[in-house]
Amino acid sequence: MESYDFAVVGSGSGLSVASVAANRGQSVAVVEKGPLGGTCLNRGCIPSKLLLYHADVLETVRRAGEFHVGVEVRDVDFETIVREVNEEVAGEAEAIRRGLHESPNHTLFEGEGRFVGERTIEITSGTDAGTRIEGETVLIAAGTRPAIPDVDGIDDVDYLTSAEALRLETPPEHLLVVGGGYVAAELAHFFGTFGSDVTIVGRRPHLLPEADGEVAELFTDRYADRFTVHTGHAVTAVTEGDGGAVTLTARPYAYGEDAENGGSGESGGIDADADPVTATGDALLVAAGRRPNTDTLNPDAAGVAVDDAGFVETDEYLRTTADGVWALGDIVGEYLLKHSANHEARAVIRNLFGSERRPVDYTAMPFAVFASPEVAGVGARESDLAAADREYATSTYRYEDTARGNAMHAEGLAKVLVAPDGEILGTHIVGPDASALIQEVVVAMKAGTGTVTDVRESVHVHPALPEVVQRAFSGRFTHGSHGHHHHD
Image (tube, rainbow, N blue to C red; front, side, top):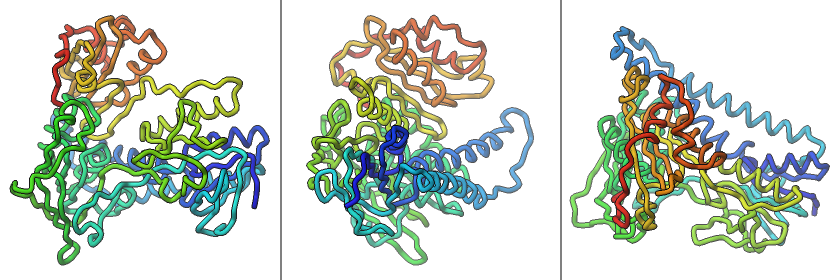
């Protein structure tokens, strides 16, 4: 048995906690079964955003005619685009690996780890298989993986998840997408821009069910113009035919009453009598959410409790139910976002090594979808407020009604939700650069007084895109349907 002051399972955001431990002279063990850097670097945000930027460039060039600029796209070297991105990512992962090997305070165990006792991990695969390590403090940061829905025939077809889709060196002729969330939205934009026909099947009434209803509706309408979109449908079966063609069958999916009121809506069901929708393509992407990797970790042996969905249970300081064992990132299931995991890592560092413990603060946690159009949001959605019977007022402003938005031929809107006393409850944006525009609202909610005045009274550059946000905050607010359930 090898003993360490600090042991971490997973090499994403957990590494920043490990490096603080190492800098304090602690001996650190890192357990990682794949390339270093976790989901974000290897098969998530970094490769996808690098690839998506190429799609945005191509889309911009194609729209040049609208601005009386005559251009033609002569050639798109898709293979080189994908190869370059994946080489860059592999280089970064290798650099992290090298750094750990060269560090006198870190020891890297390459392989899958599972708990065999309190704060004790056995490496079960890879070069270090059979080794047992013990940590004075243990951090579980082992992330999630794509969830594969229980669909008839899914095990017999060759399907892609986001990890494989980001490595395809030729765009599919016709991509079938199961799921309607942000992964589905981003990859549909990527492959669609590079020439794939795309069919998307999602259970919810709109794409992007995590977004505010009004924003999701506008987004779904735009996608319905670009692609074949079947919302409110669940895939019931998939089959693979000659030459690798995949056919899916989907049926209308109805949600129970609680879904309309912002609930999880698990009480829904498939309408077996309705006519099915079928679609055939040469590639199938399963983008139906993610599941925690706790099932490979044997958390019971360590006294670490998990919830019904398998996410690690933590207190407000990110301690698990086992003494000396902490957890952060996707595996705790709060927000499956890299910036949330980084935020949680800062909280663990403070609570583990600092003089006083402070609860992790999830106030004003933004999200963004790098699709076309872009979507971003922070705080409550209108359906959340309606479901909680909260009093609120709302105001929206359209991009095209600002000078810069008009110049860009931009479509989209910013929507603000506020409490009667002017407190900002949420802001939702769909349109160009939404991911950047949301930031001033995040700062106002987190660092300012968090009221309408913070944004409205700040001088905004004219004519720049953030004016769409300022004007949404300066507009005429209408009182939200207090107590009325807004269909999200």
